[in-house]
Image (cartoon, rainbow over all chains, first blue to last red; front, side):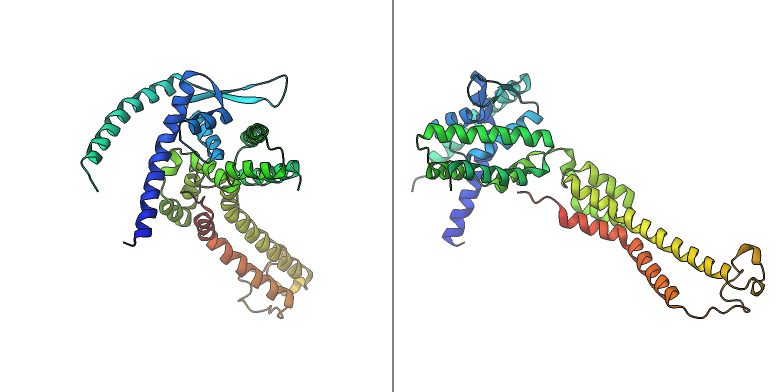
Length: 118
Length: 206
C-alpha cells in the first residue's frame, strides 16, 4: 500500500477510536458537576482532547435520547440562557462499566505496544 | 462584513441544514449554538470580524454538524436493511412503506413523498378513467337513442364491438385513451417509483 494511503487509513482508524471514546469522556466531564456545552468543550480541550466544537451538541442530544444525561435551561440576569447537562443514573452506570473495561483494554494495548521497538 | 452579520449568515446556514430535526429540537440547538459562539467570541478578546470567522471555523461546517445529528438517531429502525425495504416497497408496497416509516433512514419529508407517489398516481388514474367514462357516456346519451339496443342504460351492451353503432374517431377520445394508458402505466409502476425514490433519498451517513 502507498505510504500516504496507509497514513490516511491509520488516521481514520484513530478517528474512529476517538469518536467511540469521546462520549464517555463527555460523561466523565459531567460526572463532577452539571456543565453547559461550551464548558464541556473547554474542559476536554484543556485535557488535550480537541474536537470540532460543533459536534458536541449532536453528541449531547444523542446521549440525552439514550437516557445517559439530562438537560435543563438556566436563565441568567445577563446574557443568554444556557443549557446545562448532568449525568442520569443510567449515565453513571454506563460510565462505571466503561471505566473498568477501558482500564483493562488500555493497559493491554500499552503493554503490547511496549514490546515493539523501531 | 460585520461580525453580527457573519454570525447571522452562519446561523441561517445552520438552520437550513438542521431542517431534518423537529422544530423544538432545532430551536433549542440553534439557541445553544448561538450562545456558544458568542461566548467563545467574547472570551477570545478579539471582538472583530476576523475573530468571529475564527470562532465559526473552529465550530465546524453546518453540514457536518447536521450530519452528526442525523447519524445520532441510532434507533432500532436503522437495523432494517435498505434492500429489504426497497424490495418490499416494490413488490408488497404497504409492508415496504410501513417499514420505511418505522426506519429512521429517511427524513419525514421523503417518507411522505414515497407514500404519496402511489396514492397520487392511483388517484390520477381513477380520475382520468372516470372523466373518460363520464364524457363517453355523455356523448352516447346525446346521440340518437334509437341507435341503442338498450337506451335506458345510456351505454350499449358490448360497446363498441357490436354493430349498429360505430363511433367516428374523435380527437378527444384519442387524447382520453392515451391519457388513460399513461396514468394506468404510472399507477402500475408506482410501487417501483416509490421504491426507487426511497433508495435515492436515503440519508447519507458515515
